[in-house]
Image 1 (cartoon, rainbow, N blue to C red):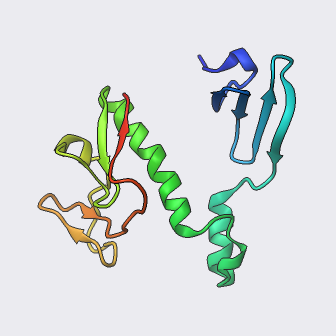
Image 2 (image 1 turned 90 degrees about the vertical axis):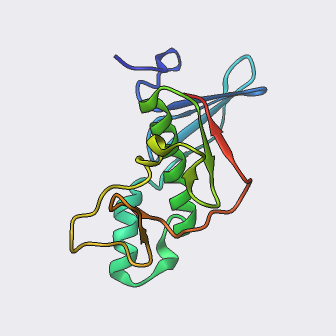
Length: 149
């Protein structure tokens, strides 16, 4: 079983817009198709292994080789995690990016982080009553994000 096969993307995401569509089928590749004739537009086939890139930058003590700033990577990953929480719960969620918490939804907030095994902790994090660590990272942008489950 797979989705998005109508455009040949057995894995990935399709975005449809007013001037065409974009296929994102891996970390390192996207292609746009424009107009009724679906002519190839801008695309990219590079970049790829973000995890390996992060580890390489840490080992080299060189943040200039990162594919993206750390906060950008954090926000990109958070967006996927928000969608996953909505899908697993099967309902719409409201997210407050300033607090990095779901609004009035304790069940959804369990997806924010895991319970850490002692003695491992996240430096600067504040433990909640259930032993979970909250992220002290402050996001920028609009006051709230909403997802549809």
